[in-house]
Amino acid sequence: MNVPKSRVLLLARLSCAWLRSSSCLSCFPGHREWERKAGCVHHFSSSTASLKTDFQKQQGSRPLLQPVQNVVFNMRRQFSLSAAGIVNSAPKSVQPYLRLMRFDKPIGTWLLYLPCMWSIGLAAEPGCLPDLYMLMLFGTGAVLMRGAGCTINDMWDKDFDKKVSRTASRPIAAGEITRFQALVFLGGQLSVALGVLLCLNYYSIALGAASLSLVVTYPLMKRITYWPQLVLGLTFNWGALLGWSAIKGSCDWSVCLPLYFSGVMWTLVYDTIYAHQDKADDVLVGVKSTALRFQEQTKPWLCGFSAAMLFGLIVTGVSCDQTLPYYGALAVVGAHLAYQSMSDCIKPLDSGVYVQIRLRGLQNTHSIKEFHFPPKSTCIETSNEKVVI
Image 1 (cartoon, one colour):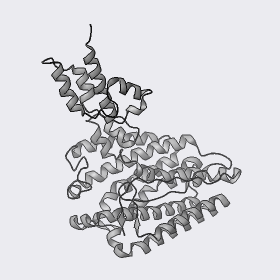
Image 2 (cartoon, rainbow, N blue to C red):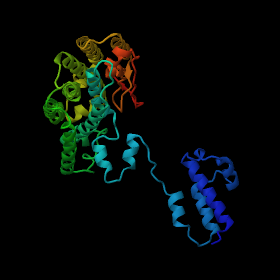
Image 3 (tube, one colour):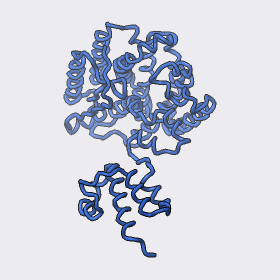
Image 4 (cartoon, one colour):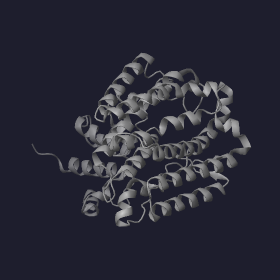
């Protein structure tokens, strides 16, 4: 079958315009030469729509080939390795469930996972890296339990979420998922999480199961007390206890309690900042938060929580015989918190919280003791919004 040269040339020009519009053309070697031959060098600025019309005029009544229409003129979703990209690339029927478990907003999973990493790192034998298998196991558990917690939260808060602009698009509030469907999905998440928990020792299984009461009741605390962020801290930092017991077989409370306390203080810092963006809506729907409790006194409270966090980490270091690199990492953390305390506004993390984490050295402190590795740092920062406190 002989294809007219004019058709081939116009198809090449159409493809060129489409690739340029999707910012992909520069990925092709020799694309400039291809553009020149196709007649779509820099002076070629016709839109894809006008090219389509021009092509149809030349072809008379003959319709455009359907495969060409599908490839060139239809917008296609582009796969991305980002969490949001993965969710957007998933089947439409799956997307509401992924958004229900906040898979597209992984920062909450990191906030749940980091205390586990600290504890596992502190429990490692001197001169040894943290247990990679445990890190992977706890990472999986963090994704599942954070998803389960968000599902429970949205089931409790369906009526409240409808009244708040930031949460009105959540799947249950928006009617994409019913409460019964969410309950079934919750059962699936908890079942898989139970499978992860059963990979640990008996002490850790019992300790992990004990956290479920906090996971279920936390969403109710905003109706009862101005300190729901404290309950969130108790819930999110349970891994500080669980990580140590998973490695050692039981908790050394002289290490685990001050580490757990530090994590709770850290959560009070970032979640109070997060709560400030919802103050007006919280008053409207009648729920409570530390942001409403502290009001203009937020900054002194946050400074106090930060100081308490550092004190707890110092006690933790003393209890497990840490050396200079550990305290050097804490000095960096303290300097950063002092800098933040002097700022009038705090850049939030994932639309509400700004927390810059420089505690990666805690993951590997015993190997630091042995080999004197310099402390590493991780900065997590995802939004350009600002919350004025």
